[in-house]
Image (cartoon, rainbow over all chains, first blue to last red; front, side):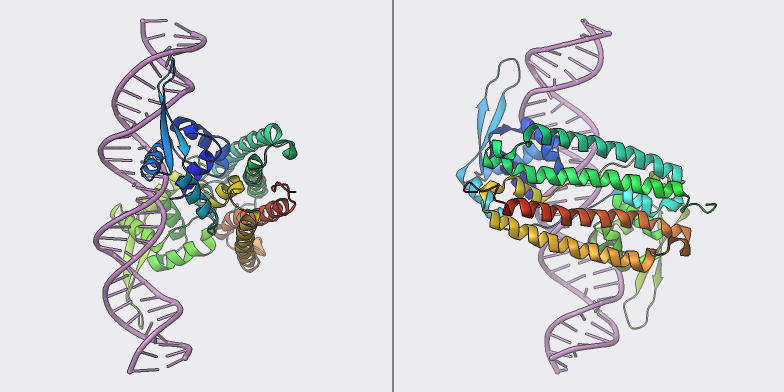
Length: 184
Length: 184
DNA sequence: AGTTTAGATGCAACAATTTGCATAAGTCAA
DNA sequence: TTGACTTATGCAAATTGTTGCATCTAAACT
């Protein structure tokens, strides 16, 4: 039920509609949580029923109406209580590493191609996080304390993507070295 | 449906029972996949129905009988085809980073305690992977080629855990520096 | 003699996630 | 003016993942 907490964590700062939350989860917050619009809308409905959030219908000109959700006192309390509980490492399920593990069933070229593709993906995400870092966290003392905490999460995202890029280079070099081919 | 592929990837090397597979997923293979015994038994039954694996009942003395599963030709083909498809990064859902993101809702001490706990967990796992590295991959040229590929996956696990430890130290230092407290 | 630990498998219920479909208004370019 | 894209929300079904329980054998501990 931790998606609920991720949503409440965003709503602690300001109000969001489901659509806006979806965008957030696809972007910067994506460094620590992934969720589709379906999950978010369903979870918001559940949170509203539990009175942890409250919704305001906002009529808009030129576009569909939206439901703006805000955190209630009960929601804030529930979130704070959860913060004190120990956190477990998230489950890893990496297709890529299943492939390297059984790499002898295909040709090194197939693996290398996929690794290069992944390297590009992670490098792109890394650049995106670096841009956020430059634009929002270049001077921590200049931003309100509540916003500074996001930097800790972003730092993890920066590390994670940089680390993937480094592994891709590492693994690519090993595969090209010929250690994994009978002839080499 | 990628758990299926992870199971087949293990069975490509040798036959396993469900119980043995569970142990594998808890240990070394845990660096790229997490699965409970329930998931594994269910998936094995489904794979058997699709004829990607075949089961042999093995009577054992002194302990319950077991079902030894082996990969079929069809299963091997299906796995090889899957290997050529591009792999997507796995979904990240990190409770810890939700907490750092909304860290202003609790005290730095609460965050620091959890970060220290996580650091110990990741350091332990890192040591475990290092032990596997020493015991199984200290000389790549001395082991059969099929087994060498596992080192690529292990290397990712080593990096991942080391990177977490480094982040924990980083985040801990920042939290202790007082940047995140109004008085500091 | 009784409890715990390890090996071995499985059902049932529940929770979470993904995927496909559906709607509806407005913008913007070919 | 047709087609693609963005904003905005949602249902239904299928797939995956988790949790609690249940069974059986045998060794090892207390």
